[in-house]
Image 1: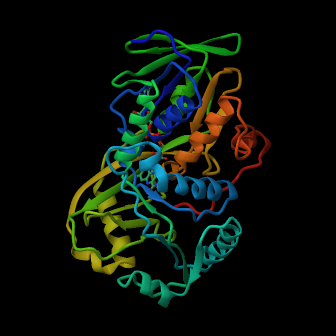
Image 2: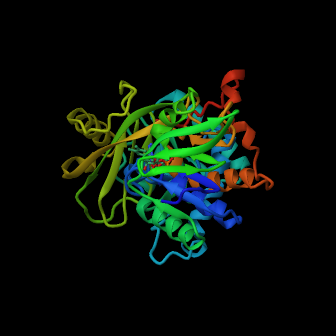
Image 3: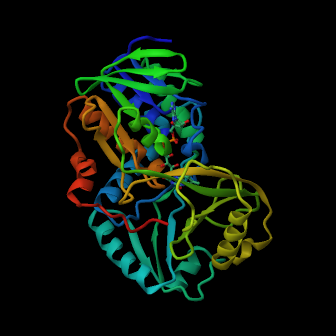
Length: 382
Ligand SMILES: Cc1cc2nc3c(=O)[nH]c(=O)nc-3n(C[C@H](O)[C@H](O)[C@H](O)COP(=O)(O)OP(=O)(O)OC[C@H]3O[C@@H](n4cnc5c(N)ncnc54)[C@H](O)[C@@H]3O)c2cc1C
């Protein structure tokens, strides 16, 4: 174990690995990524890996719009020896209630102003895009053809290999158990394999970010909440876009090898670290998805799993230093959409940490917004 580092990144998911790469690319040396399990074992390896630009806040829409450009170039940029499998089959966002439709109309205005190629579609047009969509009760939908999905394991692998080539060291199966600070600054990280002296600690642990902040006595406004997903047997290709319905709380996509991957949010899910699978999820998922996409009713489920959403009070990320523990950054609160915004989030934070010019105002993602009561509430979540 290395005993000193310029930066210790806690968490080997997409955020930790992308940030390691972006910091190293900007010339930072002695970066150590510490992961308690294997890389991608957290939310990243459990996510739907959907990538959409259809957001209701300018910050999310901008971050995801610019991240899409990075995903498009990622194999080349990271000189990846495999394929991140980024497929741009689009996202069809369906509104089955007036309130959702009213929100979508506002969102589309914002997205089009930001140059995102999104359009409103009638129920009939939506059915042309996804012929097996149930349009009974559908008021309208929005479609963006450059949205899509990627393989989260390959994306993390691509960042990992690129960062490693730049000298980043990865310590897996190493748990952070404490953080030392003195005079308001962090100075070391304690792990199950010994201490690491460092002036810079980055907390990229998503659902565990609050526990890591507690190690310096800080109460992070974030909670963890289980979300479950499943994958079906593969079948012939029938669906290009990800289909989302906020009123049914669901997303559903067909991945390149033919399986369907889908998830549904449970409004009654308790807060906590539970990631077990449940029978209730299967029932709810089946009910919701066969309402929206009835053709899927005979598909067999191959596997289900649970993972944690790291929820912030306004469903927007927190990218800031911890007060009274300078040198400790927290990158969390992605609230179910951290995969898609990770590439540009990593750029933004790396620009700030290395003293470069930030491509967008990082202060907007600061902790102070909660104290001021100026929340950036993201309406396009389920
Ligand atoms: C079911 C589900 C579906 C989702 N679908 C999507 C989607 O379609 N699109 C999208 O953009 N996002 C989606 N998300 C959200 C997305 O997965 C996350 O926002 C994103 O992966 C967060 O990345 P991360 O690197 O911050 O966290 P993680 O991938 O969770 O990485 C954090 C790592 O920190 C490690 N860690 C924790 N504590 C410690 C410790 N003490 N010491 C060392 N290591 C530690 C963990 O083991 C973990 O590997 C989904 C999430 C879930 C659960």
